[in-house]
Image (cartoon, rainbow, N blue to C red):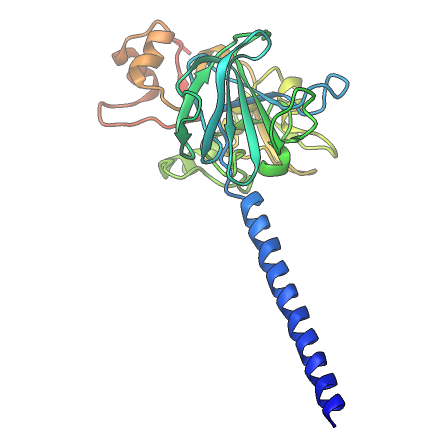
Length: 306
């Protein structure tokens, strides 16, 4: 009787132990997933110019072309592990994150943080530059699952954190969805309603319709017509780079130098200055009055008599 009681007690004890282990393991896995899945923001605004794994596998990060002086932000909260000038990286900042990852921000024009400094997600840590071994203004961005090493054995493709992108794609800073992927027929928040009414007038003698073929990309289509990705997006009232076979795109033809596509941070004054106009001329060309505002990706006429 006693042996039978002890046997039952042992079985119950072992079952309870197994359930406890499963519960604790499940919590640990969930915690690890929460640390690595989502929550990252993109460090800079610009256009993807090179990908992880190119140059015979030696390129261990993503390159994002931008304007010198544009802000660069911390992709996540962390502590600055290194901040110095390197012959290869130029001005570079390394940030160690509490989940064990480390991010690298290279070729900066200047560094705004120092070693051992704690930074919050989205805090500016420097600006876009072309220092070190660089052929143009861009941010070289690396992600390491574990600490950075000289042989970069821990480097991973940043697309693992942000989803798949492509060369030529416009990306947006401080966004968890850096590509701002919305439906192709969607519109940006804050764009005036009258812009929707103008859509029917986009197809004129200065535009053609391109029907997307299988395996085509927005980058390839824009190059085919001698345009930028941003210009094609603007003509189709979208910020998304996603296209599908059979989709019809409005492609502007001619008059390319007669129009200006508004960028974040632009003002009517700065646009007028860039195009040798005064404010009155710019407003008159575009039917604007002093109370009208402008918005990113808006197309403005900037050539007299156009």
